[in-house]
Amino acid sequence: DGSNPVLLDAYGGFEISMLPGYSAGVGAGWLERGGTKVVANIRGGGEYGPTWHQAALKEKRYKCFEDMEAVAQDLIDKKLTSREKLACIGGSNGGLLVGNLITRPIASSLFGAAVCQVPLLDMKRYTKLLAGASWAGEYGDPDTDDWMFLRKHSPYHLLRHDILGKPELGDDEVLGEPTETTNADWTCPKTLFTTSTRDDRVHPGHARKMVAALLEEAGAEKAPQALYWENTEGGHGGAADNAQRAHMWALTYNFLAITLGLEK
Image (cartoon, helix red, strand yellow):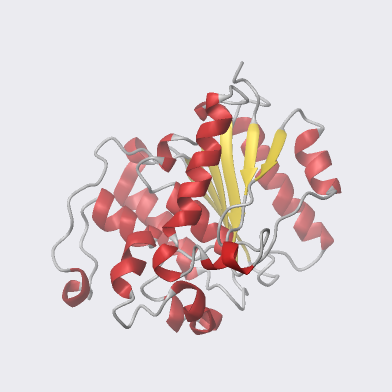
């Protein structure tokens, strides 16, 4: 009847496979409380071999976002859940995925909530931050003509320029005038961003600036809830030990439980 709180998880990059498996944390934090977990094997991953990965490289990156939209729509059409009860989650490259899902016109209307963990969000500057330069083979190089397609799936630019019509200081020679809004009715799903000060791979600046834009520029009307948690310890995993990891996941599952109506 569409009343199931569903958490849709995916990665979609670097030929990494997300396969079904046991997780005590998911069980205790989500399933035992009445939630449902769905894992999507979208293009960009390695679930079906190298060609599955190559299908979403560089200028074809949008394929993994379209796959997530298709899975979400199918879950809703089959009445396994509804927009108000559906959330997406992803970290690192999966955070880039979630960043696109909350800013793309179709995807943002399919989810009631999102969890964006240690994300890549500014694809203009990612190569200049920490390990970013090593990922140019996957995403493309923004300092070349690749920026023409990278711009189309850079969540920070989609939000500030395409949706909010804001200019980016110092980018006039790259972006020109602010673009028209792609979706005047856009509303950001309620979103929790998590990151780590000491992340040695994806700079926390990605999440910081995205949250700042949502809070200060989009405002409560367009972004009803944008929550941010930054752990001062830990690395790319967001936690330095089991206690911090448990705290991080407790925050995540409690946010989802409240937002999706699993618990009042």
